[in-house]
Length: 266
Image 1 (cartoon, one colour):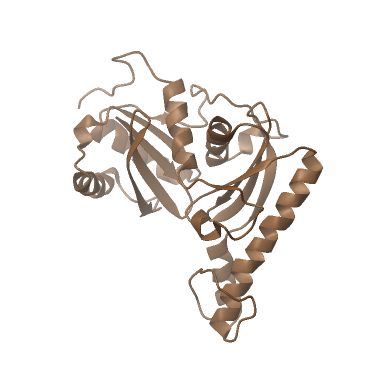
Image 2 (cartoon, helix red, strand yellow):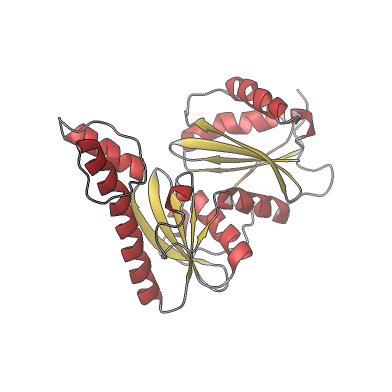
């Protein structure tokens, strides 16, 4: 089975794939100082809850936008799963997509993985909206290549900024308010962030489609994507596991012959 790890700025997602079957997903707060020993204790417990065993993990792949976390994630795979992980972005890992932008080396691993997955699942020109620490809009052309996009502050980041910069504004959770006009400070803040983001999505999707000059399907992913399901016709599909699907596809594309890719036992 495949262990897929997606390390983002806020959370790191672990998933186990058995072929094309997703057996389980788990999130942990991203901490560059967390050791491989800490990871394995946490992971073993969660695997057991799903009647899975670490001994059955024979392949691993990592996509990370947090370089400081990579050493211990690699060590987890090598020492405790006895396999050398594929790392998205390294020269030996074939993605099956091209980044047709000014500086391809600057494109985040998660955005390339989303490109691979979205093209496989939905075809045609696409806009992928990923609700993470930042909210990103990525353009995928008909051939499955990454063509650029937009980076905006994420929802939680916006709420934190309001709380930190304004002395009388509290820290509030993200939620979908029924009314745009708030009648309390908390309701006003939640409406401003949520419906403000809906307006952001609608405006940017419309501008991207006009500039790209083609009919495009918009797919939303990321931890907060379900919050926007049905909120606006600008989002046509919600796929929370899109990145994990892309990691599985890339792992299959780079699958070694039997016996290769295993780490030597200590």
